[in-house]
Length: 368
Ligand code: PMV
Image 1 (tube, rainbow, N blue to C red):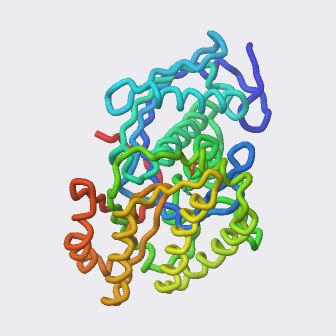
Image 2 (cartoon, protein in one colour):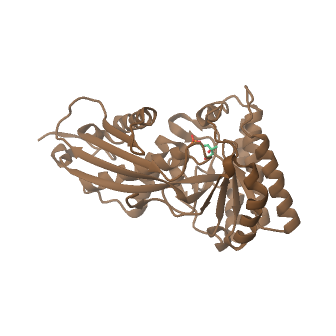
Image 3 (tube, rainbow, N blue to C red):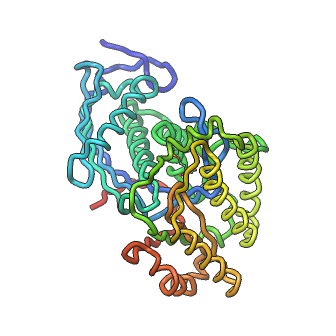
């Protein structure tokens, strides 16, 4: 009987157990960082902890068909991949690279499988919603579920979610925060809470924040001039790197207290400052670059005026791009939607906005 070293804790496994056929249907959401991960170390480990809100409607739906063999054809990944019903070479290459990386260490059993993946997103490309977070999280959740089935693995719920987040992180850092829970922390903060390998759920959240809405203003739908990977790399010799990593770490601790107590003004102060600081880091990198557009600044000014003049609980954050995430609790929904319609729709590309809200993570479901 052929035996090889297993994926997780070096226990040997019987390859005849891999001869299984099946399909898994999973969806995972994207997330928006409130305290940003910006700068990474080897093996996709973060230079500072980050804290995010999980989205609900912006999701990747993924179907994974697997057919196991008890023998190796070769050392290659055997993957058939379709995105939104069509072949997509760029995405297929990205996923193959990720699966190769997993096969080399975490999931050697993948070399015994023929895999067929098809996925689609509920949100458009270049909308300021991280599709790598939702897609890598969906794939990681599917793989850990597959492991559970083929090895009859006895994971506790917590171990399973940690491993999902850990594998997702290897695909894309921010994907580690897309597995479960409305608010997640990835990385160790100043009080030694958290883990760099995987994200954890923040449980003590005031109801005001659990009902959070996120309206995403599409202010620019062109591909970014500088990718997030390039941006992370520019933190390596950044003159403010050390101060930034320390500050982000302190802010994660601070934001958790604010999320628990429900102080909106403190929340808005921290989140807005983080958004601008992220872009400040880009503007002070070598080479320096700007991802905000004139419409981004105009929208920020309009939101700030509305926030102050109407005393409305509203704030905003930015990802590494020009599009704005407008955050507000459910109680303010009608006032904010009215304001967005009047004052921000004219700034958006073809008047486009995406209305999302805080969600709870991955689910087993088909996207049909
Ligand atoms: O996960 P990556 O490598 O795409 O980096 C994400 C970086 C930011 O979106 C700007 C911040 C974050 O924490 O998500």
